[in-house]
Image 1 (cartoon, rainbow, N blue to C red):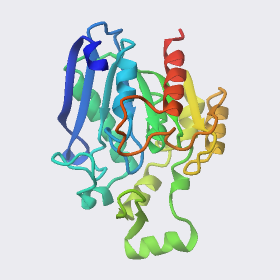
Image 2 (image 1 turned 30 degrees about the vertical axis):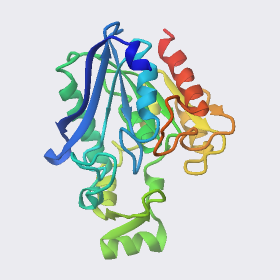
Image 3 (image 1 turned 90 degrees about the horizontal axis):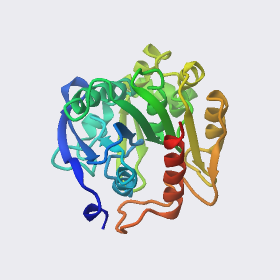
Image 4 (image 1 turned 90 degrees about the vertical axis):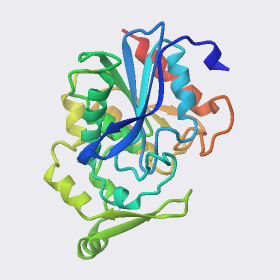
Length: 281
C-alpha cells in the first residue's frame, strides 16, 4: 500500500476549520518529506465532499510525486463534523451560496499557513462545480496553475429559468433530487439573489480571459451531467485545448463508495495528464 512507501512531513485527516459564517467543517492536509513546496488544493463538486469515491486515491497519487495536498468540505455542503460523508444538515445545504464557497477558500488558505507559509504556491484541481470555483480563483496571487475535471463553465446556467425561476422566488425554496442518497436537496432563493449581487465576481469567463496563469481543461467524452461543450468553452476562454478522455463520464469511472485500492482507469488517466501539466515549467 502507498502509505508504507511515503514518508510524511504532515499527515492530518478531518481537521476542523471555520468556514463561511463561522460554520465548522473538515479538511485534510498531507505533505510528504520530499515536498516540492507546492500545495495542490482540491475543490469537490455539487453534492460532493472531500472523501467521495476515489478522491483519497487521487490525493495519494500526487503526494507520491512530492506535492502537498489539501482537500476540504465546503462549509455548507450539508455534511457535519460527526458525519462528513452524508448530508445530515439540509438546513446548511439550503443556505449555501457560491459566495460562501469563495469565502471557504480564503478560510482554508488561512488554516494551512500553519503547515506551509503565507506565500505558498498553489495548484488547484476542481471537479464539476468545484472546477468552476477553482477557475474563479485564477486571479489569486498564490494560485499558479489550475486543472479542472468536468468543470462547469457558467454559474448562471445552473439556475432554473422562466416559470420555474418565478416559482422558486415565490416559494423561497427549490429542490433537486440526489440520485445516490434519494434525498430532496433544498436550495433557498437567496442563492440566486447572491449570484445576482455578485455577478461579476462569479463570472467564470471573465476570470479565464483576464488571467495569465496556465490552465488544463479535462472532460469525459460521455459526460451527461456537465456536457463536454462546457469544456470547449473553457478551453476557448483560457486559450488552451480541451483534453477529452474517451469512454468516460462525469466522474471518470469513480463511484461512491469506492472500495478498490487503485484509481479507476479514467481518473488515473486524468491524474497523469494533470501531473504532466503541473510539472511542465
